[in-house]
Amino acid sequence: MMPSLTLFFTILETLGAIAYILGFMTRLAAVWGVVEFAITGTNGLITRGFLNDYALMAGSLVLLLNGSLLLSIDGLIAKKKKT
Image 1 (cartoon, rainbow, N blue to C red):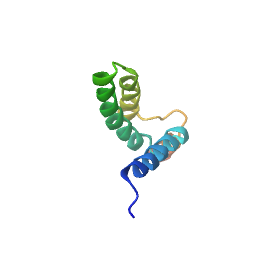
Image 2 (image 1 turned 90 degrees about the vertical axis):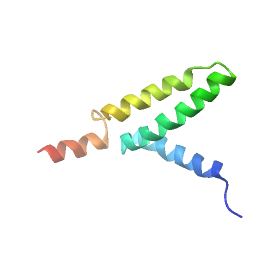
Image 3 (image 1 turned 180 degrees about the vertical axis):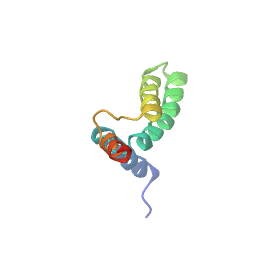
Image 4 (image 1 turned 90 degrees about the horizontal axis):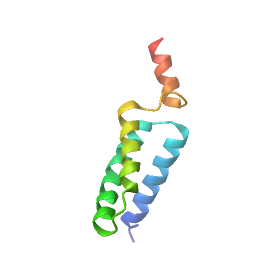
């Protein structure tokens, strides 16, 4: 029996959250956040009128555009490449 897509997306979202916490591959995880929260935000707005997923999408979009260079592994890698 094949595992359901729910399990796959749950694992993917968990790995994205760990990437956010560690500051590793932040922009890649942010792509997932933008797509996911755009979909769930639109669904929530239509059905319940909530806007909190759009706030999470905006935060993911900021990380996608700017990265997390201050306290992250990505920032350390970028600093080493510049020198």
